[in-house]
Amino acid sequence: MDSAKSESLSQVGEIQGVRLRSRRTMSGSVIRFIKKKPLGAVGLGILFFFMLLAVFGAQLAPLSPTEISREERLVAPNAAHWFGTDTVGRDIFSRILVGARLSIMVGVVVVVISKVIGTALGVMSAYIGGKFDLTLQRVVDAWSSFPTLILAIAIMSVAGQSIMNVIIALTITALPRTIRIVRSTALAVKESMYVDAARAMGASHVRIMALHVLPNCMATVIVIASASLGGIILAESSLSFLGVGTPDETISWGAMLSGSQQRYFATAPWIGIFPGLALTLVVFGVNIFGDALRDVLDPRLRRG
Image 1 (cartoon, one colour):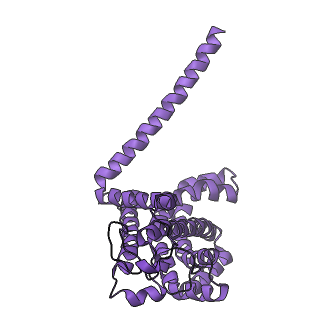
Image 2 (tube, helix red, strand yellow; image 1 turned 60 degrees about the vertical axis):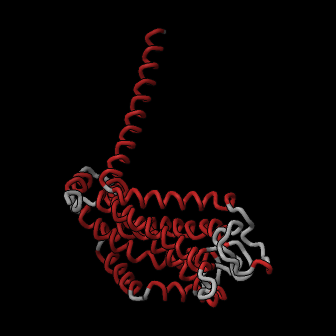
Image 3 (tube, helix red, strand yellow; image 1 turned 90 degrees about the vertical axis):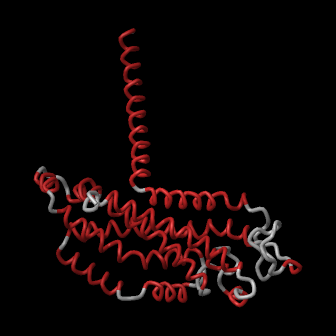
């Protein structure tokens, strides 16, 4: 009885030791990343800050983002309205906090969906090869020939304004680049010795792709995802700015810069400055974090 109890206690101790070592390893990796790439750490901090705004922005907003006040139209920044008011008297600071949720949520959802689908198609194209690879790559070539924003505008013009249609349009435009980059990485991984060894041991094609090819492409996928997030957030804002993105009643940073607001930029510049500054900061943070992550994960750049 005592031996069984001592054995169970030793197993618990081993599990706790593994957890402690993993936590130390993770914290050590974070500290090394901050020391090696301080600018990337700043970008991660900016991204984390805006993620918090996306989650808690509605609770932090001091005023209602939809409340209209004709008496307070185009009020300059003051103690009551930190970022001023827009053309119908709505508080810009509150609208920026609430709009962060949609702008960042759309970017994250599009990145996840496009990277999952694009990674699967890229790995399959490289591993299967033959007619499947040739056909898929010709489709991707034709797909890539359309300018990204023009293609997104065309899709939105046909599908109509809604958040779901924005996600679909941006996902469609983001897929070709992901498929191409993942395919090129998977082609190199496919020729590795461990893939040949798995094939010689009788592993199925699905197992080889899932357990040997895909994991060795994940560093590339992570870098693509971090690098494309800022561009997708900017594309969503561009669609809203052009009036073909999210519905008019939806609060987003791009929508705050569109429509009748543009006519007042000269007389009330704060209408465009603060939403544009929020958009610029989040895209800047994502881009410098993505560059630092690429330098850390790309083996060709680790020595540099």
